[in-house]
Image 1: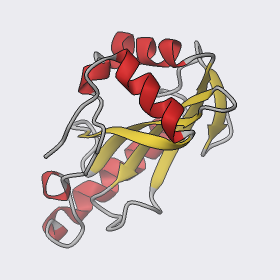
Image 2: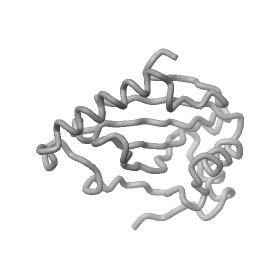
Image 3: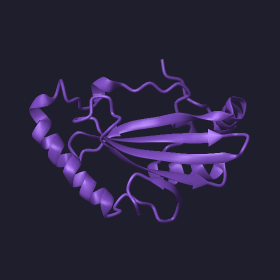
Length: 152
């Protein structure tokens, strides 16, 4: 059973007690790009007061283990409050929507084995996504970019 942080203080207390780690927030299918999944995670180091938002777009439809065909951005935030505020303003994700013990439900997403008949659609979706990513369509220039899988 998935449990969620009940409020900001519970999330902050968890981060302080954990020190260095990441918290996966969600995986979402991207309807406009067949086979693609969007992932959000918070990467933190409590001791250094470092808070980053990790965004990855992964071709689950072509990449069985979701580790090779992906693009992503890593953004730096001055505080946890700023990061959670951004999650809400941009994605309508409240702190109470953040799972304390995230577990991906693979059956909800494309898979190159079970969905092999859709391979052509997944290849087209990945190629189109790559073009759009390189054009900066997903880049948020209002944030401090720490890392990109593609030179910006």
